[in-house]
Image 1 (cartoon, rainbow, N blue to C red):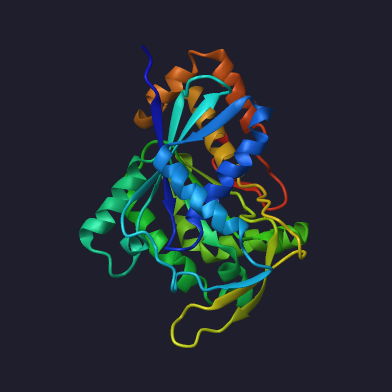
Image 2: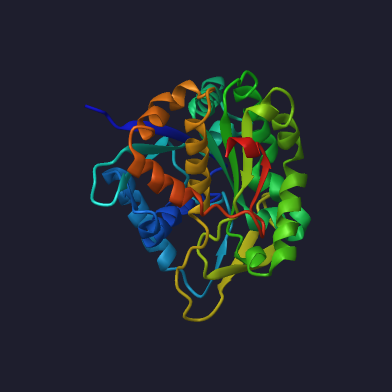
Length: 325
């Protein structure tokens, strides 16, 4: 009997940057497009309860609202695991996707050695790392508050600890969230978003592009419109901390929750997985998954069809490791 295999993915980013919202929208959007490849994504009961609660919050947003990332928002105080089973329609699951989230303090300057070690090992064991980036903090006021909100220096430090001895393929996805303003303005705005990521995360990108990581790590940028119905229009300077307040408004009075491109990180992940099927250097944590996919032509075809939907224009780009996709 063939048992289901697990693929580990680490969600990297400070508290309240939008990681849970990203997963919620990914799941909701997948339900609408899954028929295209005859696939279904089934959340585990506890994960489903968290996502359902978050979905209710996202759908109930008022016409205008304000957000101060990381301030006054209770982040998780423990490591959370969001589990999804992937299956063909009306069939038993063949792959488990385990997205690991952790308290934002684990990558802060005040993190204990054990907390940093935990995140380092989590990143090391995962096939992919998804870096959630708060786009308003990245883009508004010329990125003045990006370091305080998105903490690229701390994230870079974690990569330098976790990936220093990497000798097998890994996938790193930069996922700017809440980027409705940039992605609806056209190619020029999308290019500006891409260039700002390259600038603000230059140290990390330089590290990942150094030998031997440049032949082992694939890097993709996949902007996601977490809500699809709002744009960030204002920024208020912080009064007593370093965190600004962002003002959002709906694109129209009756605009409803309508996430866009939240499926793209998953498409890139599965495309990476399929490529590993053809690689002789298949990493240990993927061997069982890849070999099992090879036993079922229907599953392989379904994944292939779904992964063909990876976008590669208007802000979506593979920065490194095209041969790994």
